Image (cartoon, rainbow, N blue to C red; front, side, top):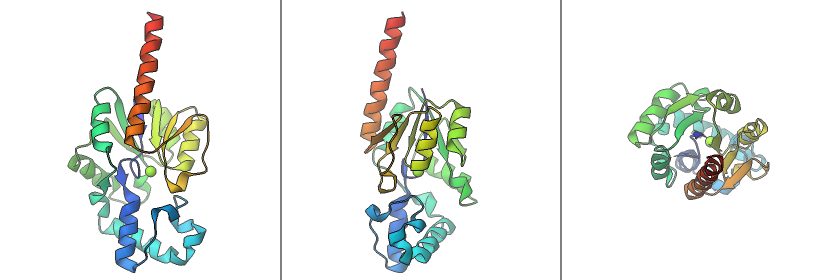
Length: 199
Ligand SMILES: [Mg+2]
């Protein structure tokens, strides 16, 4: 199976880095639960901190903090296992936000020994997914998930405070990589049963 995988908040912990930097740089202590839209600077309740949030994210990019992001729990092991049977194609919109995105991303994957078939820097993920023949996409962004589902690509949506109002028959909410592994295991089993019926 060709599996499309988003990077930030699916394999790389971007949100906790930003919240940590915000605390250090500005003494502002926000909780991840308050991050109710992916564009955090647009969250109404956080508008008093808007300038600090924008400054923190810009500083994190400039200070190359993207190179040292933590890996989301169990992502490494699960991806290594899945990569033995599936094509793992990572698709990220990072390239739109900082110029060294490609170099930093490759460095991060190598440093953390996460296997990949390919890494794509695309803003329109559903377009890229279609071109690449992606059969299942793992994503946390609500808009991307809906766009993928709309063109018939099933999505495993990594549960996050910023994607709570998303529902679609092709979108399955998952809590972590253990649930992702279970879901893919069920898909593999169904496929094997179909093959048995054919032969
Ligand atoms: Mg993401």
